[in-house]
Image (cartoon, rainbow, N blue to C red; front, side, top):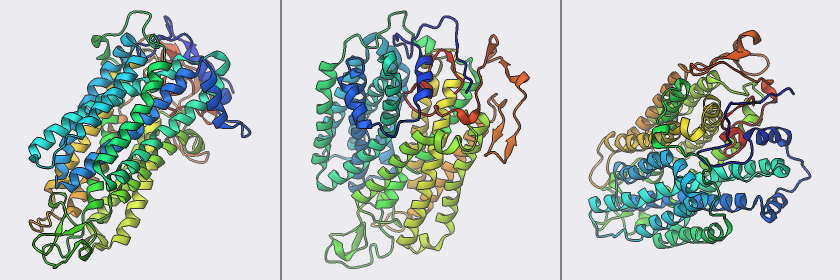
Length: 576
């Protein structure tokens, strides 16, 4: 394998405004050499070796804290959503509760690199953990006798601190791998990073399940257990990290530096990412758990009952002696599943998504000869991203199972669509992880892609609020004790997700990055690559030409691993 890495002039080794004493290129080179793990090596032993190493101790401490935090972050969202459902809040009202959480993510994403460089990773990590405690502590104050307006305002403020906490904590988890790598441990560290990355999203899924399961017992118990996870992480960060870890040794970036709009490809990719994440959150974050909890419309307000067991799943026996919807604002016509099952279903999606994202280069794009990816690769997979949601739109609207509330058939459809979408969406996200580095390789990542990183939060906010509106207002009113028929609202949310995927594909199509063509395996070439003479020298973003190193696509397996040199590399030209 022939590989060349060209260092850009003036490279200082700074990432996200954080000081760095080694080159990202050395990490990437070692990553390539050690990307295939030795079957005889025990990964648990690797982690223990890293923990005993003074050089790698910050990595273990910060990564462990980040993983513990990830559990509580996933749990918080589902605890609030399911608790609000039982208090008869509508989908739109619940979506409002998450607005400041997402807006805080937009702002913190922009400021995190600057704050980290000024204060150091230790301070930002501890600040994130403490703010998460504040967020959970405030949720204890949610009173049953409050009006809906009071509760929405209070919970929204509590969630805001959780949004700030998430991105402050994520800063350490994203950057420490580049700050603590000694030369003699680079291969082992790359394997640790791959392991940690796979578990990050998986543990968020665990948080979904754990939060819903504990909520089934007690709201206060669910909050208390999650706070214990944070308390466990704080002492290690407080006493195990150097105060100066990650502080900038040179001039730090400013807010003026962050808003850089002269990179056309990166700006288009940021806008495409906004719609890509909206394509998921238009149906996943609020409508799906609401529909899973909603009871069948049949018999509500009509069937007499003696207790809850006399009614359909998800319904209760009202004071009037008739079966009622526990939350008319959440609609009817759903599956009537328990909170534990809802948490398990959503958590399963997150876990599957995380694992597929980690292995995308090896099991998907590599065998298809689409590594390294380009804009054509992303357009293809973004169009594929439309298929599961488009199919589900038609199924929800026209399959008699949804009109007749045939729960067995509906569950089969949901499993097929959720699994398919998780797989395809993970591939898209992994491709984006590579493209942002590729397009921003001449600048500091935090400076040149500030807009890109906050596009995640904007996309989630757009999808969450939009889904709350669609799910709540669309559908026939079945009565005061039943609410609206949620089937039509759910179909509208899936359709909106499909439109967002199409918009993402169209926007990506305007990116100038098609020289390598597009293959779909060894037998099918969708777009021919340009000749080597045309691609040896390229001009990027209207600046001076630079050498672009090349390698065979099938030999590249490093993009899409968050926290690795491939995902966070800066100021170097990369061939992987």
